[in-house]
Image (cartoon, rainbow, N blue to C red; front, top):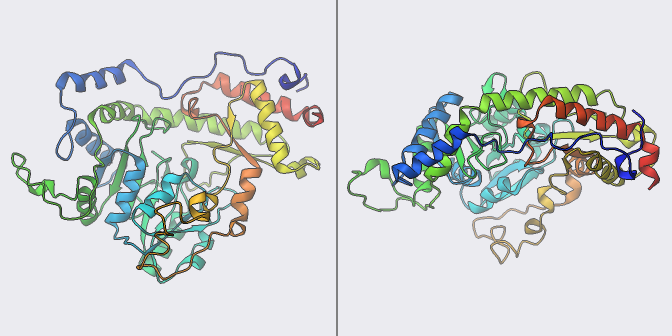
Length: 430
């Protein structure tokens, strides 16, 4: 498609007013939240009625025995590691590419994050590289279902069984995704989810934890509520006794009510996201140099992020990938396409790992008396993650989730990509 690029004064490919805002707040959502205020029950010793009902409904949705609600997805992952027996000085293996809510729970448990490079096609942890990072100190594997696509769980579970390691799924972006017919978050020993406002299942803030293990569920409840065993107490007389370390990780009633209302529409939202993602992949795969996200046949994704790769060499361009990426971002934004990078570097590059004195201080937990290992965070160990940041971008952003957009917008997006790639000479002139 020819026509002067909008970045150089041409007409936009995407008209104003087509983009829907996320989260999608309906009258039913507002009524659910107002009902909490009318009831005037905003919390409970362990959980109020809305949070308790959300737990039951999330367990039923996923076919899991136990679901626990938390105030954040990060709290759910920290609790999962605690429940699985991760202790100070243990090592936990996870992916080099994720949000900090994946690595910080490891540090919160005073354990040591060990990172593995990604598969360049799925952007998930490269399961073939995990075993070389396992040591006698390794206690758990923490795969992340990045952008809503489940990781290679068969290979990961096999390693967990071989070495006696707990497998905790970070499913914070994967509500309703499946792997070989099983729901994400139910495949390992425990699975944590986020209810952040940007997620396909939104509560504003909050988290959920799934497990079929009774012992893990009981340990998780203690950590969530000040180390207490509230289920064993007479509800009229709370003893306040602590049986373990604990936090106040409880989910409040207002976000629980909102999440319950949103959960009724989660299948609908996921279906829209899948329709839109598949349409974009079909259309953009026709453009030389673009690489839509891979979705293996044995799993589904909910496209929490639609990450699109590109290859300047396939286009015969002698340009640095990062410069080409930045020009694409500028040109697509000018055309009206919502695009972003969503992170600029892998987790091992974060200052907390490059300067270990700025976390807890004094190099802790790496200098903990419980840890006698020597883990390094050399960025050269993660070449695929580094390259991914230079050669990909994310279509849509968190305020304009793909779960809420009409096909008219997706068609305009496809038109905008064709327009930009039909005018690469013009794009790279400036």
